[in-house]
Length: 108
Image 1 (tube, helix red, strand yellow):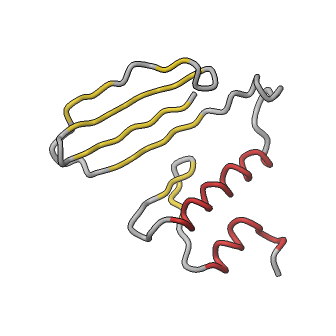
Image 2 (cartoon, helix red, strand yellow):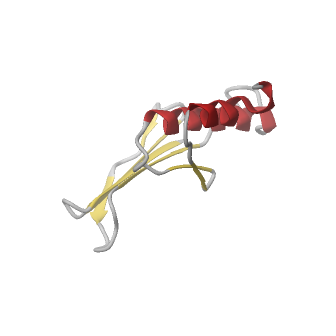
Image 3 (cartoon, helix red, strand yellow):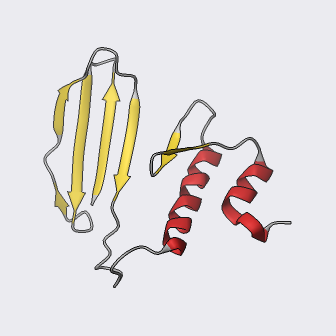
């Protein structure tokens, strides 16, 4: 399952749409009024299709791979963009910090 949410205070609208079955099934978009104090945001939520990959659950290596991809996003966006992985804020100070975050103990 894959879900996108967009909150736009400029229009006062909140958009939500979900796709399932490897995006073959598209849910109807839901547009609603945005609460007054809500800030602009984009939230992408991804639930991997374990059956498709012959898995019963994600192991630690799978989670590390997804987290590394999230750090790639942090490295490519400005400091004013908050990136979260499983609810935790991801931040990078410089390229060395990025390398340590992605490669861990493999870096000298």
